[in-house]
Amino acid sequence: MNFQVTVLKVLVSYPDGFAAMADLKRDMAILATSGRDWAEHTKRLAARVPDLDIFSQGLIERMNGGWRITGKGRSVLEIMEARPAPAQATELPPVCAVEQPTALSPMPSIAPVRRKRERKRRQRNAVRRRQASAS
Image 1 (tube, rainbow, N blue to C red):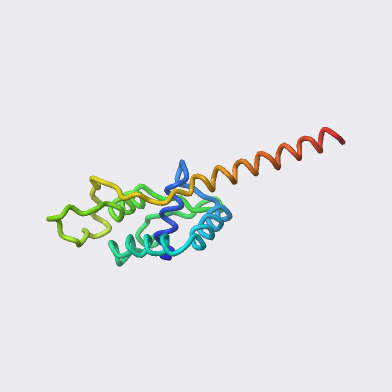
Image 2: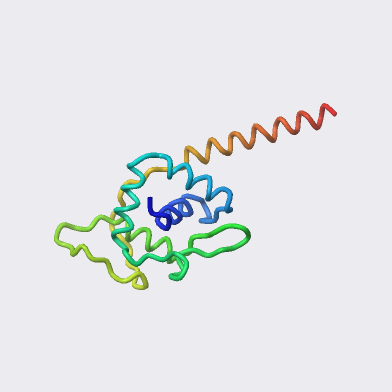
C-alpha cells in the first residue's frame, strides 16, 4: 500500500477534504487491511507520479489536528486516476503542471465505513441522552 496515495484517497472522500488524525488513521487502517486489491490499486496510482511527495508539493495541508487536501492535491489525484488514451504517452506532466483528466477509473469507496461510523456515533449519543435523562 502506498501511504501517500492512500492519504490523498481518504482525504478526497471527505466532503470538505478535511479529516481529523483519528479519522484518517482509522480509514487508512481499514484500507491497509482490506486486501491485496487496495495495495495493487495504490501501487498503480503511485506509478503514474513516481516523485509524489504530498507534503513538499503542497498537496495536503496540516491544520487543526488533521489534514486537508488542497486543490492541487485533488488535481494530482485526478491525473493519477485518469486512464490514458491508447495513442497517449504513458508519462505524465510534472506535478506542478496539472491538467484536468477526461475519465476517472473506478475506486473502492470508504463511504459505507463512514456511514457505519456515523450510525454508531448516533447510537452512542442516544444512549448518553437516555442515561442523562434517567439521572
